[in-house]
Image 1 (cartoon, rainbow, N blue to C red):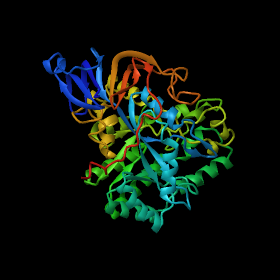
Image 2: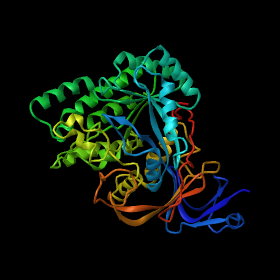
Image 3: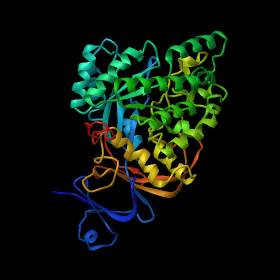
Image 4: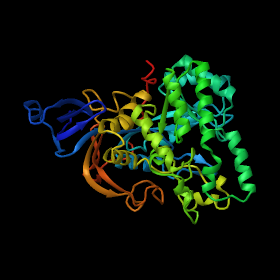
Length: 467
């Protein structure tokens, strides 16, 4: 028995178009777009009709950077794949790409298998994996080829966190050379971790222990220096590069220069860098710990460069780097020593709304909202046009979005498994109303109707900007 749904009367907004149309869905995929009220729409014979009059009909969000159940600093990210994907759905995101982790001394396969075990049967929405490469050796390099073949097509390396995830320039170069051969995409956490560790040690010796010093030691210049180095190593290797969580004016300038040179270099930023700042890190009574993430929040004046980069396409993607730790019992591990505060912030539920607010505020256009939150991450990570758009043949991952509804962001009402909101009290215009994942209603008129296990693992093609 085929199942048919029609979403009627809305303004369909994709990265390329805005059209008033009915969306016809059959067996979990978009069958057609038809002008509202035409015979095609009337004759479709849908069992389920969703009225989107006065609303936007947009592709489900693709969040290319999340960390569910991630071990860090002696604790774990507070969201499981079950709670995290449910919260994502509430926020209009219908696909996440999470990070499987290779531990030093272990194989990539062991890490990937462990993350499959965490996620399988637990997700409310579809998911894929990147692979964190912590231990580059001959076996690792061979495994990279196998992973690309089976749909894990991106590999993250760290210039930060010596002793944990850190790779030196030689290891990075070898991995980039391999990616140049096998079509994989290297994702880089670009901060000079060796230099930062010196500054951390010196700050603590001076008695500078509060959360705000986390931002002061992780200097923007050390993000820019690492970004520059990563770009040049990728150039030597003949490999593409994707720089994650870009936060600083100087790092944007490095990406812009590389792209002006015609290099296949890409950059993402996150809502926390667009909407929050070092003012939050400096909040009294250890409240600043809520905002400790890496790269760190920057002074407000950096925000203009990030918005400009999103408008000029020198930054292409907004992901969340969702990695939540509760204030009580987790962030508090760093009382008296900022270097022990678990690094990460919640945000998977807030991204689509915050970026719609950016449309309201005039930072970006409606279509650019969909481009940076849906279409480009889908293309970047080999999921397009199955994900990231509303077009015949695409998965029916669709959000009915009320652009006029007003909401106040709060931990009281969010669905992430964390005891605070990074955007507590922020007023936002626009709200998710109904969410379909492969045609199945996950959120129905602000009621959760999804289930764990609906979300399917999704193998990925290689980066679609390189083909």
